[in-house]
Amino acid sequence: MGAGAPPGAGKTTLMASYLDARAPAALWYQIDEGDGDLASFFYYMDLASRRATRSRRKPLAFLTPEYLQGLAAFTRNYFRDCFARLERPRRCTDP
Image (cartoon, rainbow, N blue to C red; front, side, top):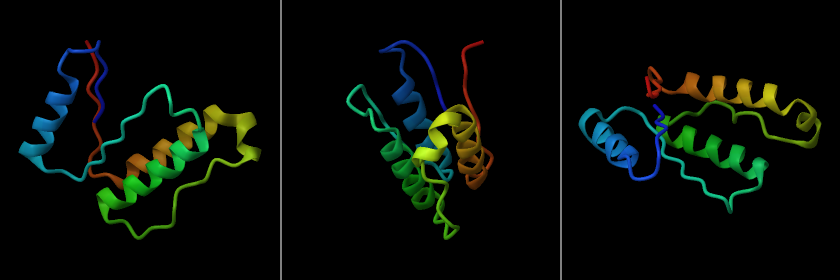
């Protein structure tokens, strides 16, 4: 599940209360402007997804130089595979 809204709108509170109430397999990954290394982002996202799901599956793809030309396709495929590990992934969006 993901949420997008302006700062202070209650996204963190919403997500934390949902996770407390439902206890699904979940991962929490927070980034900010200091996180500029895409390869590290994808690496740690894989670790988080395997930990959240207790997956023993092979790691997700690593972002290596040959993927940089097709970064959009790499990202789509990466998150498709990542979300497939989670039980019934959901996304919350503004109407």
